[in-house]
Length: 404
Image (cartoon, rainbow, N blue to C red; front, side):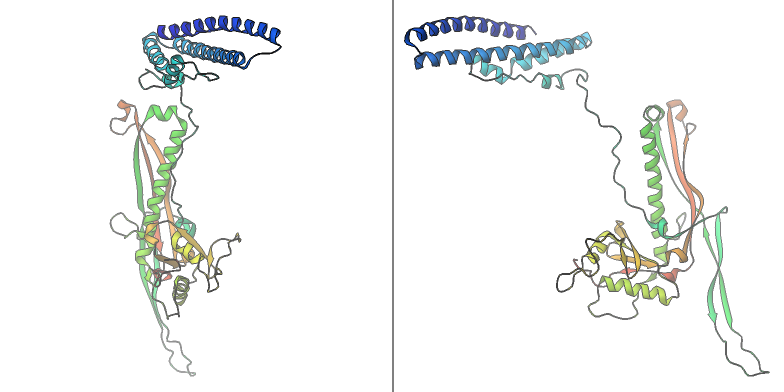
């Protein structure tokens, strides 16, 4: 601090000395002007140069006084233990400033002096956080994959641990025209017992009781993230669960493999989806949607004819994605890239919720009470019944869609 004060005294002394010289020079210039009815070029240049230097020194004096005033305010608000370190840090910053060294070495006309005192106050060597950061409100949550499968499948509820149903597996039709007073033919119908067990999907999370009490939004974010994590796994189970252990019996492993009824000239992805629809229809089930990857759907939408016109899309249209009169659900699930799933989602499968997704907080798990920790559990119980596996067609695009 003393070095900064000495520098200020030096600048003030130079200002006082220069001001005296300037007054004398101005008086002589006035006398010269009265005698010769004007100033010589040499006298005018000397007056202008000294006036410029005097203005520059006054600007430097203002800057140093402002810097010292700001420093004194910060120091006055700090604990005594930190004040000395801050004074040394800021003082060193001012004294070592290259702009100040240049200014003292040789005064430059009409040049302002800038000493970055605020930068010193943010130095990592200064104890404590003197200048508070500009914190933006809220929490910026990570981006989430869109979940779609529940929107397609018929919903349901159950109070049991198993969904049980009877499925007709065969019918031999022997109906015929018969003459009067003759024996009638017998037809044959076959049935099979089917069941889908209720499965549990769950996960846990540990947290500090204090942080969740003190930051309400954090608790809300944890709740949201846990529910999303649960629903993400639920979607994977409904689509790809293999039915073993605690896994659901998913749609894709049960789906019928894509086997087109005939070939199409210059067959592409658009044809594949129409032929998959036909395969569902030939199984006597009405198809009601397609599922494919974002990339594959974008390539289909961008398919053009030989004149460069879009075949399906109208870039100015606001209608939702449809193909062959059926809605298209585009997903970012990597397992669907280059593949598709067509089927009768509403009539051939159903989700039964036994226990909807819920979040429970407890302080009685392990040593949570002692450590002021909490355990958060998120779980759900559900069953998936795929009534007609033949109503779902899953396969690869036989020919790359446009753009691949």
